[in-house]
Length: 243
Length: 222
Image (cartoon, rainbow over all chains, first blue to last red; front, top):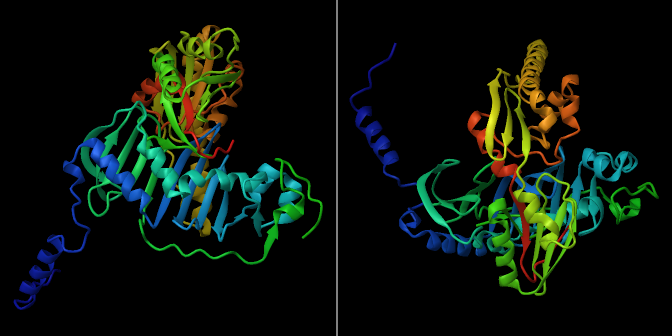
């Protein structure tokens, strides 16, 4: 049974509801929805170049395989999260110029069962750009460097960019931009950051949220050095020493 | 707003009909170029350091050293009969394309429930039920592939699969489809739930040339 509201409580409830409808809490309209396509793209690229931090997740094409990523990172180059490649997932941390991976299945797949058995479920320090793990982390730099990401977004495929409809993506008000093979959704409230980019055909989408929310990354403890396992280079190293 | 590429640069997808003009435009923007072709890839390097790594659609490319770009444009433009099999858990589509024209097809779906919350007997019961539903769905997809693709098998130049890798492998493990496995293209198409519209759009994916473009001065990771 529903009890009627008391007379004194009703006006207060109405006031709360009205305040909730007034748009007081969310970020303000940034005007991008009414701008030309090329201007929206310029504003997005400029916002990206000045960004402090982001949470990026989704899947990205790579030669012959698909990367799944779920990463938080900041403009200092520090990042944390997970990567999935070839169906196996690993945790990744990059901080202070050092890269760390944890994922027995990933090492089993790309460095061999022997290496994976030695590593187990511990964190491994991987050398930048070399060997299984290091090359994977290195290949993420396009996404974890705001300048490189901005460079890629600034060049429309096919040369032309057109503006589409305003809509909502991941709960954010956005305007869409299209080029010859991609769709970019740009926030129309707050800073004009990307909310999602995806191919016009297919399902590999990259999502962005948590823009400028601080990302604190610390180096893991109890770390193995991958080079001590004889795996500084090559794709199937053989462990030469136990940790 | 091109999509960034793992390892540096960005990805563009170029239809075969646009490919010659795209490569000419790349040359005009970046100066003298050299190309190196292998059956799976053609890499075009410019004097200013720019790189366009073109993934051969429906490889292998029969590299012709005397032809522009090793024969990539002619390879991409070639009219082919292609079987397409798209599978995700619960949905499937099979079709035969002559060029970009869909000449035979079947699409369908079977319900496969989501995972149950962890814990207890009900979790195991749900898992068994889900496993049974998944098997039924894959069997239905295999039936569709057999009905649509096998009658055309003798004329197929290639078979292209798309969707979920494990689901596709599960379907192609059906003994009836052994002759199709030999024709399977290496790249798995990235597609959402396989509805008829998705099937109809698939030539835009399997005919197109994916090109990783790296601008001068950028760092490249293979």
